[in-house]
Structure formats: C-alpha cells, structure tokens
Amino acid sequence: MHRIVSRHLLSLAVALGVAGSGLGVASVASAAASSAEGAAAAPGHRHHPAPPPAPPPPTQAQPSLYLSGVFGVGGQQVTVSGRGVTVTGVVRPYVPGQRVLLKATFGGRLIAIELLRLKPSRRRVYGGFTVTLHAPAPGTVSVQVLHSRSAQMTGFLLHGSFTALDESVGPGSIGRMVELLQQRLAALHFYIPQTGVYDLGTELAVDAYHRLLGTGTSQLADPGMIAQLLDGAGSFHVRFPDQGMHAEGDLSDQLLALIDGSQVQMIFPISSGKPSTPTILGSFRIYYRVPGYLPDGMYFSDFFISGYAIHGYDPAPDYPASHGCMRLPIVDAITAFNWLGIGDWVDTYYT
Image 1 (cartoon, rainbow, N blue to C red):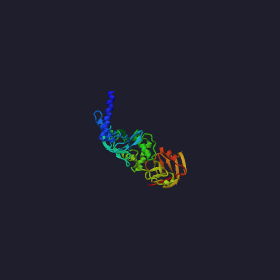
Image 2: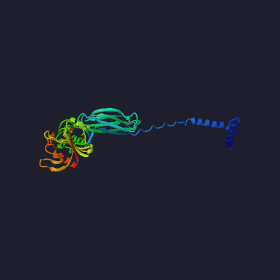
Image 3: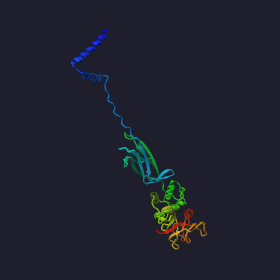
Image 4: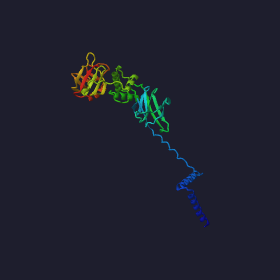
C-alpha cells in the first residue's frame, strides 16, 4: 500500500513540476524525443546503415563462329594450303570493352595468337571480330576463341577447324580433293558426273575449263587452274538470251553450252570443223534428231542445218578435226541429246 501511494505522489510531483516551469506539451514531446535518441545511442542500441545495392549480373553472351573461304565437302570444311580463310566471330549483345583471345594451331603447333577487341556493329546490336588464317601445308587448322568472364559479360569458348587438301591429284586419284574439283566445276556449269574419282568425265571438264580460261588445253588440274577454280573465275558469255532453250557453239574456245534463256546449264568440250571443212556459222534450228549410232559413227545426233549436227564421236580431240559438225566426246553425247529438242536454236560463232 505504501508503494502505490508513493508512485501516485511521484507522478503528481512530475506533473506539477512541468506545469510550474511553464513548459508546454511541445516541450514535453521534445524532451521525450531527446530521451528516445539518448536511448538509441546507448550501448547495445547502435544504428547500422543499409548495405549498398548488389551490382547487376554480367550479360549472358551469345557467341557464334563462322569460316569463309572454305568449301563443304563430305561434311568437312576444306580449302588448299596457302589460301586465306576468314574467321569471323559474332557476340550478341554488344558490351563495350570486351576482348577475346584467338589461338590457331596446325598439327599441334601454334601458328597464330591474337587478342582481339569486339567491335560494335553499325547499330551496336552485336560485337564482332575478323581475322584471316592460312594453312602452311596440307593438314588441319584448329581455331579456339576464348572470352574470360568479366563483370560485364559471361565467359565462353568457341572451336572451329578447316582442312587444307593436297592439290596433287590426277587421273585415277580419289578423295576429298577430287570431290572438291568436281563440285566446283559443276558449280560453274561444266558437265561432270560427280563420282569422287578423277575419271574421264573429270578430265573432259578440266580440259573445258582450261579452254574457257584461255590457258590452252589440258586434262590436268594444275595449281594455277585450281586457284582460279576456287575463286570462281571464268564464265561462258551468253550471246542469245532471247532464244529460250538453245545451244551456243563458241568455236574459238571449242566449247558448246546448253542454255536456258540467259542461264547456262551445261558446258562441254567439242571438236568443230577442221580448216578444210569448217563448221557453218550462224543461227539455226534443230530439225532432225537420231538416237544411237549412224553408219559413219555419229552418235545421238541433232541436225541443225543440212548435214551439220551436234553429235558424239570418237575421237573428239581438243582441236578442230570434224567435217563441219560439232563433235562431243561419246560419254557426253546422250546428256546433250536428252536436253535438246526439235526447234531449239543452235548458234555458232567465233569470239
């Protein structure tokens, strides 16, 4: 009972003291706030500032690696030694300041190492780099591109490779180099069965390509010819694009082209009329066709005026030797015959 009375007396004294001093309610509130701050500053009640925000995670890189100047043959990327191959890397999105380390090895030996800055595309959508590599000899070049993880972009590792083929091929050869030759000759519209063997069809197509390039006649694929072939050099100039399905005989180059409008479909080597019995010049239409052999050895013949015809014959040498016709090698005759038809134009001229 004594303790309860004492508490009431103490409360009354505090109230009277406040009132007697002339302090208002606001002063009381201020005093209370000061007391609270003092309490907060007291040991065991320290204030800790909020931690800084975490940095954003690095951008997820989406990289790709491309090789140009190579050719796809049998599932491999191939070329020949000494020929430049362009390695292009693309990384999406573009993040400024990023670099990649490119290493290239040949037969386990380091042949190139470069630290490359990713350059922005025109609209800064992606970054990229370009470098040119050469295989020093026949064999495989392996390419590795490394980007170490940075604060701005995740890391990645890319791999690529290409194989330089041995150019030393000739009649009877097989393998990827022969397949590459046949593929590229066919791409330029030379008639060539793609057998994978350096056979008679390959020899004839190689000879026709030499003629088109103006490098004489040869059934051998020499390095100079191969370089031009891989560059896609040489094309048959169409003189009569308005004739639809037609044949043009270029007697200067000893070539026959089967053409649809302005698009060359097939090119064959021919032997036209020798100087004493030259091939007639002009534009004519096929008027008569004879499959199989004729008594004089003409094979699958398309006559375009009088006794002049496109036909197979043995021999069909790499120089003018006929009695005026355009001789095709026997192995090419049926293909040409099946493509041509009655009424198709045949044009003969010198360039």
